[in-house]
Image (tube, rainbow, N blue to C red; front, top):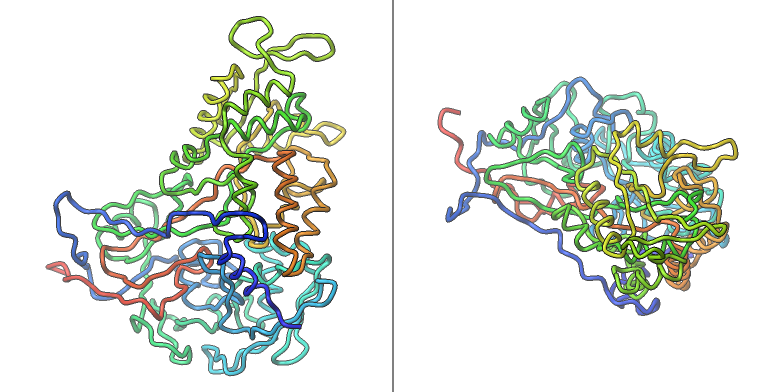
Length: 537
């Protein structure tokens, strides 16, 4: 049975989701921006040396399954092919897997074939045993394990064929296999053998272009230099001793790089959203939760994060072909409709004090909502205040409590003896990295690991499972059914999806495309041009 997922996604994208009745989402392109002095002609940035260099940590492993060091993980992207690649337009490809992979009729058993002639850095040929081993490693590694909670196992039946079985149907499984391929048995190696465009050289402070990759690289060697601490890294980059850095502009670790630079933004699956305490008298009412969605100006919220976010009213990335604009529109910012929905929820200014009240068990109560947010993340507190101001114009008082990470998590995980949220909050602002299959089970199902508000509606699981099990022909309609139910009941309120940045020196690299899973996605097509080396170096 031919695998048609990638073709179906591409077709949906070209058709603008006509099957779902949606218009194509307009998004900012992965932009390039530069910095320099006003009126200055921006040529190639001045170089500190005539080599291309990345930062790394010599004391930590360069094995992608044995390190959490972000610099070393970036270096590893040069060395290892991913099983599958997912580009910034949500297209699925693979350098190492044949296109004719198969899935069983029940959607829970997959068969993949490894392409012939793929060379590993030690001269051996890549086998299905290497790929199955790598997927099994990923399943046991904290960095990747969250996406494989329904995987039963991965195993090879011969040198070219491997199989994956899952505990429930998921016909979007290949979208989760954006994990690096290492040689079978190399879990303990600090510099494992891979199949990527560059290879580790034992004891050397560089990676070297791999002649067996089948393409010419822009430079023969990429050097590894070590700088520790934010100030040291920034200085090394601005002085051109390292040539490429990545940055999450919405994180507490956001680094401000200056100088003559270029920034390229790429889309991620990191979704910001507002969750609800389902034990809260007001938030247990889906009509009230819908009002929160209508009061949230997502365009302004994304603006508070500058270029680092794209607004989203649905829990699906706006770059995905499953993002349905017609469904999203019903959840978008609309204060006039919000006022009407609040009235439908039983709220009104009963004592003419300019603030809303509601009646519960014949007693009038002031409406006063409490939202908690981690104070250590850039922009999130401002977005909560934006929501509070919006609701405030309608007479709904919202208190924004910015907490340290430890206090924030403690509040979310505070449950009573019956397992219901016992924290003193009505709403919380959170961030989650979704899988590329958009499985919302951890967020919305009763035993989901991220179901902090204790959502108990069994319909979510049914809709999610139907979407994941759907064939190419009915997947878009099953996704639309799921999204319509989510919008109508508002168990969470999506805010935006993050964009991260790759920063390089001005005009040093051309032809670059970056993705969330692989900064060096198309490195054979890069052209690297060094500026004039600084005098005295």
